[in-house]
Image 1 (cartoon, rainbow, N blue to C red):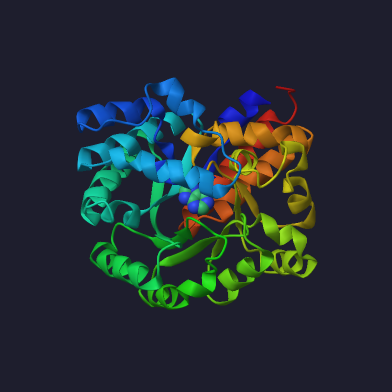
Image 2: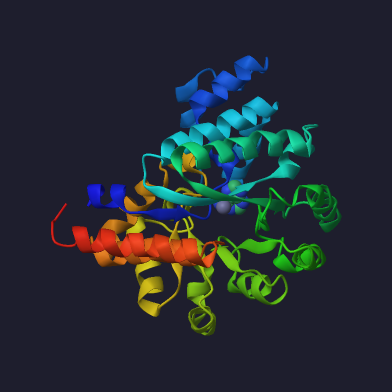
Length: 339
Ligand code: ADE
Ligand code: ZN
């Protein structure tokens, strides 16, 4: 099954580029920038990656991103991610970055953008991985801060396809960001939001009805509400599910209890993604592998997840159709052997 997953063409739609910062690179960048990390070595840092809720992770994630200071740092971070996924049959990515996490530390919006974007262009040229860049608003900050960030992005619409909403979910409902999402929509950005990761089903409704998002990031809590499941199926709203993240952040207790099989069974448009792979123990193929068991190692279901990833992506129709055909051909070629 590992080799089937390894060759399966797929898109990644829920990935925080700052969450790909591996401990090795974190130490290298700290040294390059004259920063002393509060961990004596890589294994001490890794040992700190024990989370019992989203906030435990976010505290370490924001601390970790402090080593990102220059355009070159952001380039190196993004390039390291592309090096990983070029070996994972990833054909298309739509990745997040958190400009407010940088601007608040005195790092210019353009320092982050002008490091990340050229690396993505080089990944397209060298590895044929197409991409979209999505800017997330930090929901623990207020809407004015998000609006100021959106205004900074307006000069860079050629490089940013959409806006999202992330960070501490509980107590920060989508409703808080209604105006800034309306403005982003007017400006032609695609819209996504984290909802129902730790928050209740009501946050998923708010993301749909108030923010008018195209996709829901995570969306696990939807499974508590049969009417919401029905709606997500009827409207074929994509969910970007992140299995290893869900176990590491205790959104689910064990992978066996992950709702993915029920989501597929209900007809929801679910996709598999890695969220913050440097912190959660695996990139996209490790996430597919993690759910393969609970799907009975069914190649058709794994291929369905890959197909969904292209059908949920912000792609031109011709490219979408050709990528979905690639999945169909791959499945036909590999459906009979047991690896
Ligand atoms: N920022 C980075 N990863 C996140 C996650 N899983 N949930 C909310 N905000 C995030
Ligand atoms: Zn996320």
